[in-house]
Amino acid sequence: MHNAAFRSLGLNWCYVAFEVDPKHLRAAIEGARALDIAGFNLTVPHKLLAVEMMDALDESAKMYGAVNTVRFERSSGKTRVTGFNTDADAIAIALREDLGVKLRGARVLLLGAGGAGRTAALKLASERVAELHLVNRTPSKAEQIAAELKKRFPSVMVTAGYPAGKMDLVLNATSLGLKPSDPSPLDERQFPLSRTQAVYDMIYRPAQTRLLASAKKAGCKTANGLGMLLHQGVKAFKIWTGRAAPIEIMRSALEKNVYGD
Image (tube, rainbow, N blue to C red; front, side):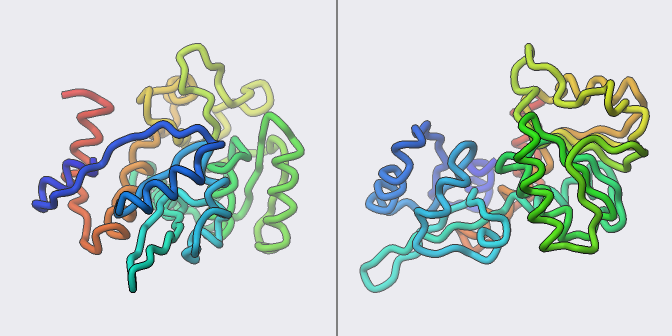
């Protein structure tokens, strides 16, 4: 999507992917600084590790404790590395656009308490959902985030574990579903899909995970993570270039890549 955007605006830029072992992340950041690269994105498992490796953190990165977008700023012969988080706002926009979910006052079941799960939990709480129920394979991680949210957002009812009542939204922030052999991240014995109206899966490839397939059969509104991917990229594009992103061109490039012609 970024290369399509660069071409459309006549920018002589190029976006490429590099696989970096976590133990080499700091060296990779310094290498990018030396190479005069404008910026880059980070994905799992680098988003949390990078926080301590930045020269400065944007308020978004401070708020969510994770960095997914990095910008290099050059001044007086020095290069400053600044970390941003564009994931959180992208989650809210995608839920509104793709599922029509109004977060304020909503009841949400969130699956996952890793980096993506924590960012989603903080964003949902900041949007003043009414209830937020956190489920994770390691319960202590969900409990830790729940305790943090209760302190920061006392008006939001937060629990660790499956809820007893109906929910407006189930949101998957785990990596379960990336492989065809993966089980669903939702234990339907504890929470049947008939008890929610909508299901959002942050995974976008495959376009339909086992969770989304089950949700469709249950009559839920469903959406994958393509919208979130798009909007975090739109914000990153502006951070790097200082120009408004050509959203529809980026959306079209993503849809072609994920869904085919």
